Image (cartoon, rainbow, N blue to C red; front, side):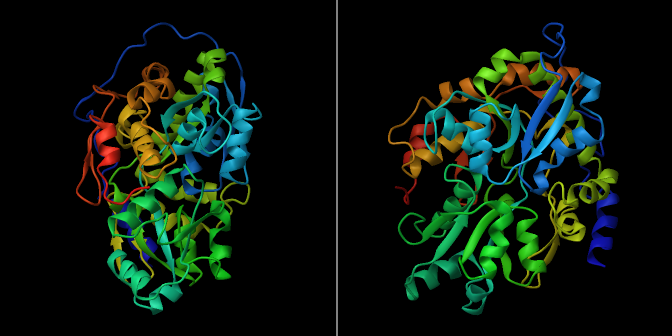
Length: 411
């Protein structure tokens, strides 16, 4: 019944994801810089991991948005983020639904082989979470401060899982723990587990908590093995999440294909964020070929209907967004730079890189702008944006080295 109510609220346009056709402030439609030629490749193999936020890849392929731009997207289900990394690097995949920090890590040679990488667009914002085990709930550790208190009061090896060492989930988990005074490198142990295996690992007591994308937080609640202590939108409202990642070489060889691919995914993103399509998209991606999870487990949080497994329910305006009038998808340089600051903070990078130069190498803003013009999606005036995180600290990309060094808890 909560889902029906949520769907009603959602359809009323309470979140007005696309209620207005007016352009967002600071955004403008732009003309194509030059005519775009035919795609160099017509069949494009795009990897994905079984997560709710792979939706735009599946929708673009299933709804034919790819055909409009002269390409055929072939979705390829992958087992882990390490597999995605390896297949991008060796050319088995043309592009993939990917972790922002993974693309940056590979580019700089941390977390695997070093290879020039590219971010073509941001696929979504928000919609990940941190789940804790019922054993912690029994100890009263149902908030960040209560967990920090328990870790100090009852020392043992507390184990938390994330999905890839340089990836978003590792950074959200570390940031959240540190914001509550827990050092993720010394006070607890962290391990890497592929997203679809999180619930099974918690069920057999392999971990105290994990950070992952949906539907694997909702699934822990549905299965009665854990509860949501935080959503990632509480850590950073409208944070960048998955990106469309590929290699620098692939973009150089296939610039028209890259534009077509981004344009097709922009169309899919716009479709998903239209409130009347969300329930059907949840049903589509629930299929075993894609996310392979019960439709209600996906649909609840996909529609912004949250419950935390502790009795609290709410309609989240910062739900997983795929388009939001075009505000989601631009590959902001400041977003990419943020991951570098956290890689430096946690010792993954030993020295400060040239933050802005690296972001400019990776984030393909020119390709994106062409694709956005093709799909009639507005683009922002600036390639930087400003955000305030859970600890009140503002990130605007202006002084990344000082920001990285400013944290009390770091490597």
